Image (cartoon, rainbow, N blue to C red; front, side):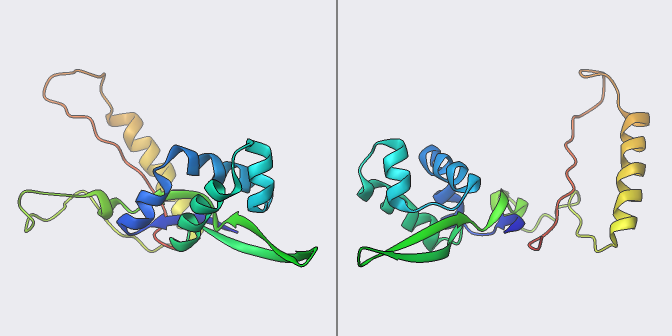
Length: 151
């Protein structure tokens, strides 16, 4: 299982935006399960479970980790493809002026040791330069550091 799945299309985003599917992902993250196992745990029809599993499977959010034959029936065990799922920041970006360049987003390639040092320096910068909320002539910003695409 990968550490992180970065969602890069709206179909994937839609498939994980359903609260019931989030519940299924949480259950599958505990250990791989079949649709029947999920249906039994939740006490709901297996067809409903399979509909949602198929949506997650179709969009690459879960995958089949093993199959077993039981009484001439092939059982598929599912698990999430990653421990955490986040949307690509560019997926949710919109602008009235498409030509306007995003001056607040940067792609970096660095070694793990350099990343640790960068985080340390960023933390110190934020600490040294942060003002109290509501101070005059200030704006609030959120800074995130996350891998792009790979684990």
